[in-house]
Image (spheres, rainbow, N blue to C red):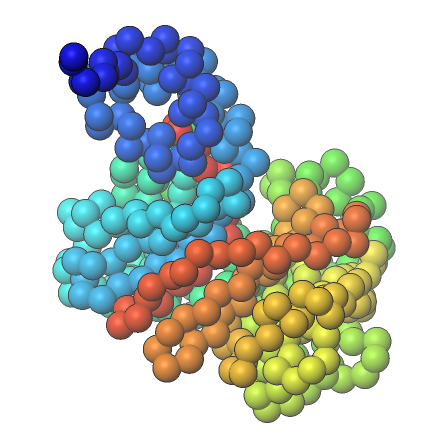
Length: 384
């Protein structure tokens, strides 16, 4: 008797069935399918399949962490809420033709298929289109060359163009001679423009009516008040300067360059992003999410982290960095701790409309011995 079971190759499976199976995969897994053989590459390159994939992938939320040991070991680590494992994206090979092996790179931002890096050696900005595998040097901003320490995560925003386009905008805000200025780079004409912000005299929805969702860029997080610029995401409008104060009195803090601030020594960390602020405490008090009032003149507490979730994330050591992002009515917060060289990562989501907190479990992440050189949330990653 023949005990060998018949095998079925990919060629015997209908392409429609394969596509329905492939649609269950995360984007990096679909990209890898292209290298299996010509038959599979043809299936995943089909226009209808690419359209269906992109529709699904556009709703995915990504967390990216850039780590490096030696120059050749630099890697983007990616995790999406549509998968259950980390993806390693080798980035060194893409950057090699453009930068020298000894250059010190830092990961600034991501949006769609675009990833933005800064060279601390040459003080140059580099954009990477991950799907098209292209790298572009961005000309210096009107402020001149800027190294790693000049960039604040909550003070900048990368905005990718529509899926399939090769365009993006990069915005950041700074005080120049004590005046809040917004700088914007547009990849379409490879040029920068700068605009001085105007003082706000009304509620934000009326000020930016028809300008699309608002972009918020932190300029200063001071002892009694912050300085934040707001501008419509569609562009072609003047940024407005907001000066939100803490209604409950001053919160002592000192400014930190990477987008968050400490208060009261090591007891409290304030993480800023997209017009929101998360206060993270190392004691037993609940962590809190704050947002801007309708006229942008106050910080208002909008929610506390539930006690049960606090118990899940409580550690004997404090959070040392993080980032906050809002998209489609949900605020995402990333909190990172380091204990004896081991990184611990927490991903929290807060649904504003439902007043609901979610802790997204993350698989183990081995970064021991590597240098963490940039973190960010992102969305809009597609096959083209």
